[in-house]
Image 1: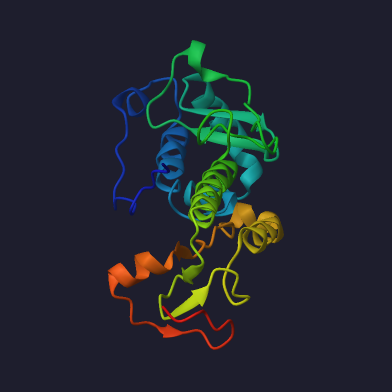
Image 2 (image 1 turned 30 degrees about the vertical axis):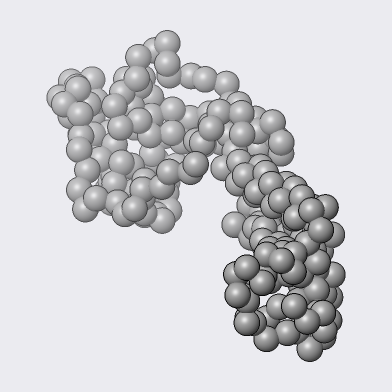
Amino acid sequence: MAVYRSRPLPFITLPREVLLNGNLTPTSRLLYALLLSSLDVDMEFSQIATLAGLRHPDELSPYLEELAQIGAVEVGDHEGRGSVLTVHEMPVVPQQRTHTCVPCEDCGDCSCEYIKGVCRPCSEIRRTNDQAKRDIDRWKRQLEAGATYAIGQHAARLHRWDCPTLNTPEKGMARLEEQKPYAKNGGYYWSRLPDLYTADELRQKGSRKKHCAVCGPDPL
């Protein structure tokens, strides 16, 4: 289950060991505060440099190095993302400062900021694929049990199980395949298959739904 921050707080908390570190220049302390403040904001390095009183982002390098020496930030290469600046809300000890990027088992991109070994998009793909498998298994069990009537997602009409207007395992899987290129942008989802019923089940439910005009299911 993915966990998201609902909204960023309007303030940040700075550790004393950074603010009171005599080895840091005033600009480094200010830069650290700006970096922490920008974590939830879409801010370019050029903007951060300007706020730190510098003329160009390239001038940030010596101050980033100061922060890296105390474990407040890290710069490292990450699969599929290039060079990444990691800002620690609490400075980390030397043994924890440098880690090798952990590529995603599925796509090979960096998985460090989510579940180590699986990036967020691929985790969502796995979850959706599992959902699809469970739904298809349920649909097949109902069909094998003799269910020949179907009620779709909107539950507006009664259909035959093989009505061409309804979703099927084949249609659903084909749609997932088409969505794969958009999975990293949240465009990968499973459309639930219709619920299947036998005539007896519908009679017991007292179903009075209108019949689909396309497939024309048998009267109950």
